[in-house]
Length: 110
Ligand code: SF4
Image (cartoon, rainbow, N blue to C red; front, side):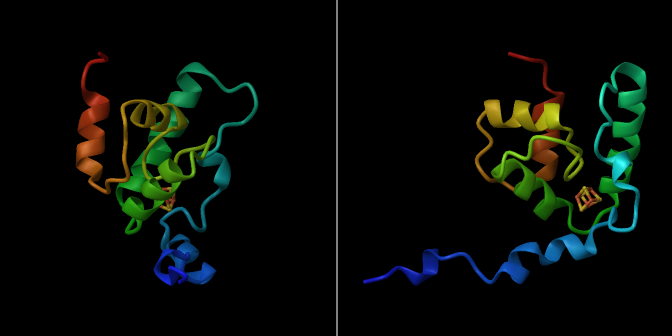
């Protein structure tokens, strides 16, 4: 017997959160680094993007999506690509507790 409950929902349902993102009408270059960007300018751009994410009504969905799909580039859900890699290395397992994720990132490296 088929396990229909395991099938993904309609595509529009999966992606509909993106229409409510606070970044929707913003320049995507605020969230994705240009070639060769490093150091302070990268830090400033990422901080500005994270401030937008802090106010976003779909931040939890965005963060979960980026972590689950191993999104390699950009700031998603308020997490930089480096922060997402750190969360994945530390065993992120699908939780949507953003405060918990942020606290894990602020802990000293083990
Ligand atoms: S959390 Fe950030 S990157 Fe994600 S939709 Fe909202 S503003 Fe955009």
